[in-house]
Image (cartoon, rainbow, N blue to C red; front, side, top):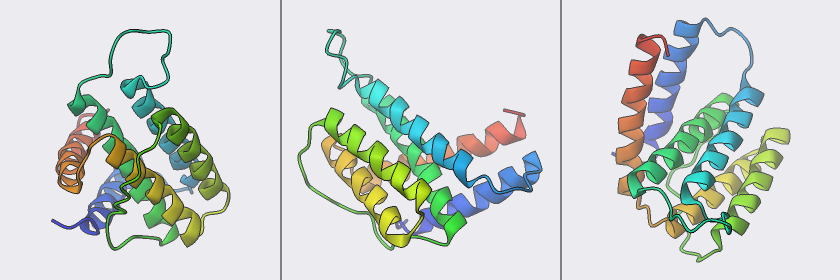
Length: 160
């Protein structure tokens, strides 16, 4: 499977959710806030900012699942605005995670306020840097996305 196919998978999931939940209004800002929250949950699992704690990061699988939770919302936001990417932004740039999480939050907020192709691409570039620093490959991301996508359908069916 190619990265660009995730946009269609997300479009189908969003359509299913909209029908199941009877959503008939613009939820772009809600999805934007959800993306910011998911990024914060990802940061929390890495524990990169917890200077006061000696406990290490969560297991890789937990961090990857949080990462793809963000990817769901990022795909959804793009679909809503008619924006997409042809390929995963592989950016091999070593960064301090704390600084990069803060940078990514800023870029997400810019995109929510000004949803253009450029700001959308910038958010994806931030996620490319995060993936590199978290040692996630595109195959890791696609596999985890597909798994979580299936879980999200099941959640909708069971009244989550």
